Amino acid sequence: MAAENIPYKIYLSEEELPRTWYNVRADMKNKPAPLLNPATGQPMGYDDLRPVFCDELIRQELDNDTREIPIPTEIRDFYKMYRPAPLVRAYCLEKKLQTPAKIYYKFEGNNTSGSHKLNSAIAQAYYAKQQGLKGVTTETGAGQWGTALSMACAYLGLDCKVYMVKCSYEQKPFRREVMRVYGASVTPSPSTTTQVGRRILAEHPGTTGSLGCAISEAVEVATTTPGYRYVLGSVLNQVLLHQSIIGVEAKTALDKYGVKPDIIIGCAGGGSNLGGLISPFMGQKLRGEADYRFIAVEPASCPSFTRGKFAYDFCDTGMVCPLAKMYTLGSNFIPSANHAGGLRYHGMSPVLAQLYHDGLMEAVAVEQTKVFEAAEQFARVEGILPAPESSHAIRVAIDEALRCKETGEAKTILFGLTGTGYFDMVAYEKFHDGQMTDTIPTDAELEASFAKLPRVPGQE
Ligand SMILES: *Cc1c(COP(=O)(O)O)cnc(C)c1O
Image 1 (tube, rainbow, N blue to C red):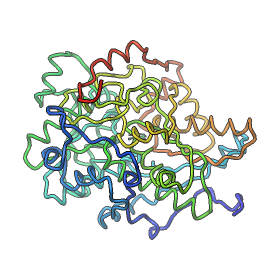
Image 2 (image 1 turned 135 degrees about the vertical axis):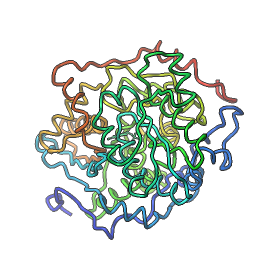
Image 3 (image 1 turned 90 degrees about the vertical axis):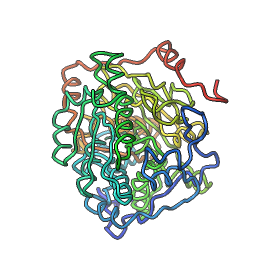
């Protein structure tokens, strides 16, 4: 079909909302490495994980074989409130860049949480409810995941306890209030409400917290409060599975118009939106049916893929969580305080880590000032005010489109626009006032962090 016939927005009907999630692990020859028990170094099975996670979610976490997993009707009905999400042809951006490239983006910011995180939040809350639990605990950094989970819990009548990284709690009071609108209790982390919080406060008085520390607190509360489990918004296999709805919808929309992307780009924090977006396309690549270039974009100040180690590491600071094999900067790594652009987790999804390790995916690191330049360029022509996280993908999509302009190639680029940036205006303000800098960790700093990686048999 001729390019002119493609609308600005490709909407799918409610009927076309996917009925199954796609589990890319089923098509991977090298499966992601299992989670290990930090005390014994042994792989963790279903029974080992039950005190922490919901039963059905553990089954999904461990299932490396089932290709299609049905989306329960109740979750699908919730999805219908804000999905299918539009796939947008960025005609205005293409024109502005004067590129022959064809640019598409999948927009996930069309819900109150402002990001794709709601896709997994509703699934996780649903399985908790189905198990008869009273509530769930979690951590949140910038606040998107906490907001998404609060919304899902409110809908299903579950209690939601959120540990919010203290510096965000203080800097983003509006995020906190949104969570409270949806009935969640929000505690700044580290707090005195947990043993691990008290220990961290004693060791680091005045600390403004980190994601890894908030995770430790949330896990402790889940495992010591009857009727509660812990849920996590990224990194885990189950989260990637739920987020595959992004990719399945995008592929359905493109297939309708006979469009095949050459390059698929996504920002990578813990890897869930990128993993979800690329899943069905990666499946084709793994099965030898089609080829694509996949590009993960990460901040230069927190470069897990491009400068991290493929190794087992702790997922949290308190070292209470299972060990995961991922590209990691070390669980002690804390990105510079100057870093405003999100994506600050030290590790990366084990699924994406394996795919990257096997050469099936590329990664680039970009500096935040360049990211905000791209964000603004995009906002001014496409209208949407992007989240700083999403803008990492915009940066590289623009770079690839400009490369096409040089070579004259009319490549088709698809990128994930994960959310909106209304709660990130302090970061935009810093950018506008010329106060945004790029702090890139030195090799020595990374080596010091790697030296503290846990000792695991078979890992030097
Ligand atoms: C959380 C978040 C991300 C990064 O998380 P992933 O798990 O890597 O997808 C990206 N964009 C937005 C808007 C987010 O809220």
